[in-house]
Amino acid sequence: MSKNASIDEFRGNIPTKFSLGIFRGDFRQTSDPRNFLGNLVPRNSVGNFRGISEERRNSEELFPRTCFVVHEQMFELHKEEKEKGSEDFVDLLLRLEREETVVGHENLTRNHIKAILMNVLLAGIDTSSITMTWAMAELARNPRAMKKVQSEIRNQMGKRSVISLDDIDQLKYLKMVIKETWRLHPPAPLLVPKEVISEFEVNGYMIQPKTLLHVKVWAIGRDPGTWKDPEMFLPERFIGSNIDTKGQNFELLPFGGGRRICPAMYMGTTMVECGLANMLYNFDWELPEDMMVEDLDMEEAPGLTVSKINELLLVPVEYLDH
Ligand code: HEM
Image (cartoon, rainbow, N blue to C red; front, side, top):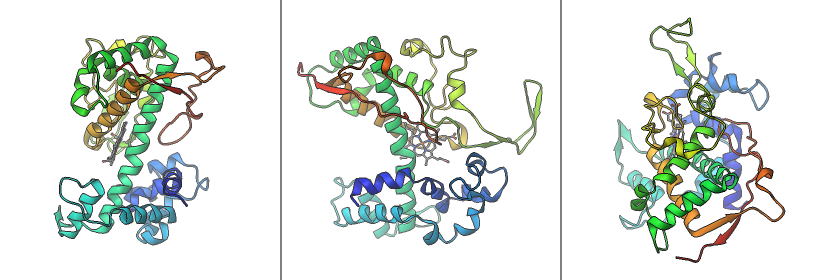
């Protein structure tokens, strides 16, 4: 199996996604009938997730084979020690393990590294690539916004080969495009469930402590009471608005909020901003021959993260004027 094939299989493998709980305390409640995943996934559809908490102690049994393959490939690729400064993320973790670094109360072990890598793969790659795909799909459907964002990037950046992190702050319209993409297409449409701490009232209903709340970010983003013309892709709605994505503005929660807010919010944002900025700077994006803007579908695939059900097909045309 090629490396890419095994990574794809690993990421797409639903039991693998659920096995995240192997390394984390959060899924201790998997046998609880109120359990989030157990409730989302019908019993016996892809396995009985409610019984997982007992079995998961034996990670060898539960850990899918593809997961081991991916980890072994990663470790194999990083077996040579590198100099400090030229290390990547995996090199760094392996060095901390060799140096018997204490993290929290214990040494960082190989199992911790596997858990961290799995978190990054599951939580990081999908969410950023999903955002970039939806952003490109919306821009392809909205040539005016596409032209505007490309003009901003090309005018601000002048001639250069790559747009770096330091340049991104100047790209105000690009940031609005990304926020608007997250409003309409939050990669995680349902947040991690939240447990109510103290009683409160909403619309005449008293919500009791310990109730599990499922926050449907997708619906909030399209709520006509909150957003004018909610179905329209209109990045300009953020001009002069101080709504951001840091979890304080409940209208826009692509990274969630509260204690369990995405810990990699800045990394995720940076990956999306840099990726899109470079794609939009270096290429014009055309629809395939015989395809009209109206033919672009925006159908969503079901899942804990929501991607486009059909692949987005765009033709990159190198932009040579820089
Ligand atoms: C566009 C990029 C991303 C988006 C939209 C996103 C979104 C989210 C959301 C909505 C949550 C749940 C928060 C809640 O329920 O309140 C979450 C949790 C999490 N994310 Fe991200 N994420 C992104 C990128 C990343 C990256 C790059 C990583 C890792 C490198 C990452 C790691 C995590 C982890 C570990 C959690 C679980 C935190 C916890 O349960 O305490 N995410 N993310």
